[in-house]
Image (cartoon, rainbow, N blue to C red; front, side, top):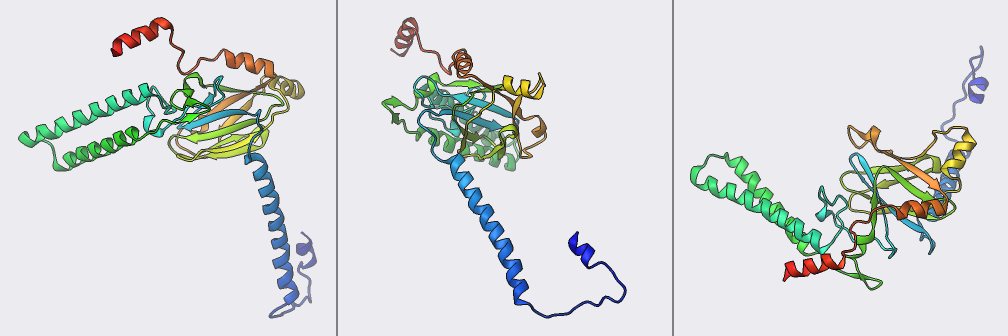
Length: 295
């Protein structure tokens, strides 16, 4: 506005021509340079603060994204998330949690698919009813399924704090619809994605992180106002904190959101205790039946 006013048209004004001015060159180099340096340094300090190691008593929550859904996982009493692999993802195991039973079921499913495809290829060798391009696609699917099978067979079982990572996930709790977090308690979010890049955006907390397939990302924060307190503060009984996807990830992107409930630690613990675990502990009768079946 200043330049528009200072250099507005006036009769008799004559533009000054100069080929070069070292002072101007320094000015419009240093000012943006200093400004960008400040933004970058301040940004790195903030980034390191929210992505650095969480405190020992921080609550870890895994947030899993896929088109067009959020799934949240809480660790059980062992405070350790069970191991997971994208190779085991299925309709019954959307997070790809690793267990001996899950591996066996997935291998049986893949072997059945391979057998079905190979029978189609073999039948075509005699009657030649299928186009050659379609047969090639069947052979390619068999090849990819065999690679998938091998990747599953290569999964290693490790131990964390004396517990098998294939068993630590049994007491994990998987929830949908809404996420609960305690007030005045540090929470570390671990983000995963099944399909494309999503962006976990929590606008009320001024926090956002991309969820990237194959690469877990994370940040930590500490909520300071419960949902109930914020409703009173705003005078809005319907207010809710929300988690949104801030990447255009497909046709139903607009509907990819989840309610976040911030509550007291006592309320949070009571809610978490009421959630179902991934796999309930077997009773003595069930263990006896399983042993008899395996025998």
